[in-house]
Length: 270
Image (cartoon, rainbow, N blue to C red; front, side, top):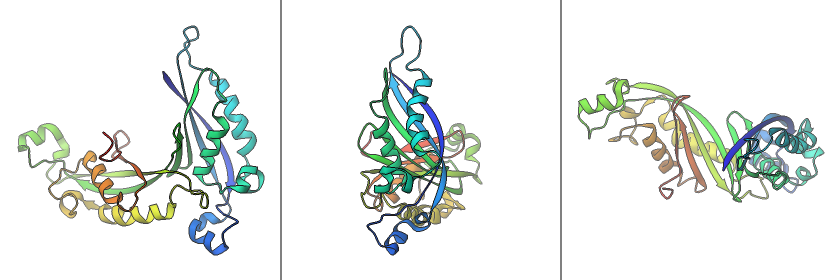
């Protein structure tokens, strides 16, 4: 079984607005997104299948393009979704609802392979994803800068230097971290969201950004007292801080550098 991903780009305008709510309720739920605005979307369509013994491919990419573009370019590209698409006249065109619609429109349309996953990037800091399960995932990215020293009190100085090298520098070093917070669940039929984005922003700002941005994790924070603040440990600490306020939390992702990415799905996922 091999996975194959194809990217398609399109542009569309939308307004996050539910006609069954008052103007005040819409503004409270959707904020500035209650105004008409637009995005350059990037859609990633992942299919899976077996390699054909004669051609050496799973499926012809031109066939994927033809099927995906028949939905994306014909129905969505260059459109104002709320006014020009029948589904989004009745459903709030959130990223979650758009990716859910695309899944239903594309599932079963491919021959010799099966739809595995759809990821829709609304902008560089927000994307939604749907796989073969019913759950929709919504991911928000955040930036913070922090210093740390990789040093374990359970190891000797020589062992710390051998394992962590220059990252064991006594004065520490720093990174521009990118934190990915993913929540998962069913789409709320009123808001069109898995969880209100403004609530996710508020919780992350309060519990992560305000605590750790422009801090030395070893010296300035209670949460890492007695811990070696590796990126692996950071993902666990961030999960423990966020999960009580975000019960639908699905995953913590942390980019320490452009080369180093770490992911944690909680203690129940071994």
